[in-house]
Length: 200
Image (cartoon, rainbow, N blue to C red; front, top):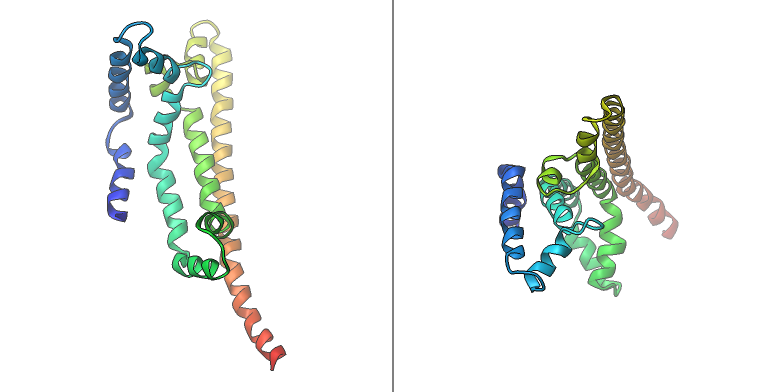
């Protein structure tokens, strides 16, 4: 099961973004061809809404999936998940409680890295948004360059700086939480002889 999931999450790296958008465009045109008032037309309008373009959000999720999956999978592989689950079950915790209060705090670093990386990749992406005719910041910069070239250059530099700051923050947060989670088990092991001595 894990190998199948790994292959599925790696597929967006193999398929180019323009090919994914071409397939989405064909699907959206097919939905719009059903005519005004039809279910397909309403679904098309919801997916391409300028207020919340769900089709763009879904595409970004797919494009970022390989990186987020690898990051979180690497964090989970360092945890004794079976031991944590059995221990929390003995204490009466349910599956949701175990996931939220036991597992999630131990992978805060990979989760924060994935969130920062996804935001940085999405805020600078142009191909998908331009092909779907959705006005994002990179599309706006491209339009602005024809009328205000200096202004578009300034905003482009600021966008690049923001992206680099986000990636640096992701790396620092991942390393900080990684060192903290690695230090906690060592402190627990170091305190065990003291507890045994106190009991005896």
